[in-house]
Image 1 (tube, rainbow, N blue to C red):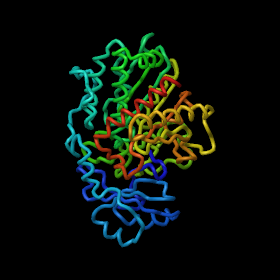
Image 2 (spheres, rainbow, N blue to C red):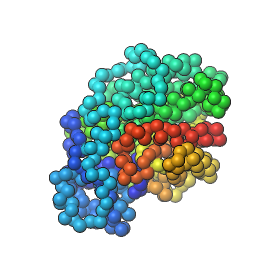
Image 3 (spheres, one colour):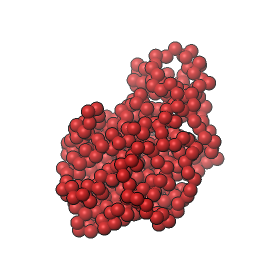
Image 4 (cartoon, rainbow, N blue to C red):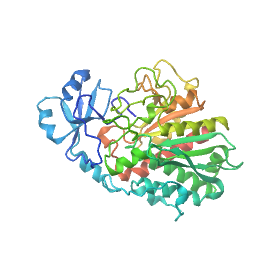
Length: 435
């Protein structure tokens, strides 16, 4: 997602030389990431930058522009005499240093169903030492469910455009499955946001191990809510970031001869065609699709949510993203409207932020607020749909580490996976026991 100057959305400048959509591995070697001070002249400066082969990070340019510039255009950029600071001297090197595997090295095994996989050992915390391939994420779901068979089941809510399963796990406590209000978590709707899948799985791991070890707090949580957890809801885009282009954002649905992908989080069938907050251009990063809910991924996610609404309802929805360290409430489509229970949601969000800050010596700060007007306008988003159509009592998007592009942005080092999970676990313990 894009969030003012704090949030980085890798998107080509409107008239810049766009990196072609190809199966050739894109390394970003030599790309320099800079933060340009705009002093209120963002539009004028953007117009100058359009001549560069570059990838822009943020859309709100009132104070700054964060942009990755191709090595062949660095000299041209220097001649513009803009005020800037360097955030990353070599984006390609940061991608390699991120760990786990190098671009293009991800496995190509296709699994049509989790039923094809045989459980191995129950996972341990070493899983969170590195980023993982999509295939390994699938195996992880099978392995962790096998260690909690009486209170969980694997779920598949649908298929992606390229036919990959959208998998997850359903957890419950006393009373049996589907007997309590739902907690629904979505991860990795934007393909490059790898940390979101890892944090969602860290929370899942703690729920299962805590319940198995008779942790009274976790028992209370699982005895009161059914959890439906989907760590990777954009599998095609996620696989593409591992094989070809680490900074790919959208799905992989073919839209034209030159444009691929839809922003699944601009495709939800609620206020989809509200002006502003999404793009009608199929080549843009925030492309909303040709019609509301016209992506197979969104169709699957919507239908799954509707079944939860028709059963016991949705108590809590969280769409996990990176980055900016934000807790975002609806609404995105209307900057003049607040949710009916705004004060309650903000109180809970402030409590989560305080629990996160107290979880480590780093005192990581998360900022709560309504998506618009305090942050930005976005239409066709999941949190707005869940709030008004899904009637969720609490509907949030949480933007994980780091706070800004200077902290590696989407390319978050693997040694921050566990700290991200640990602080968010403390935040969720507070939320799930007080909401």
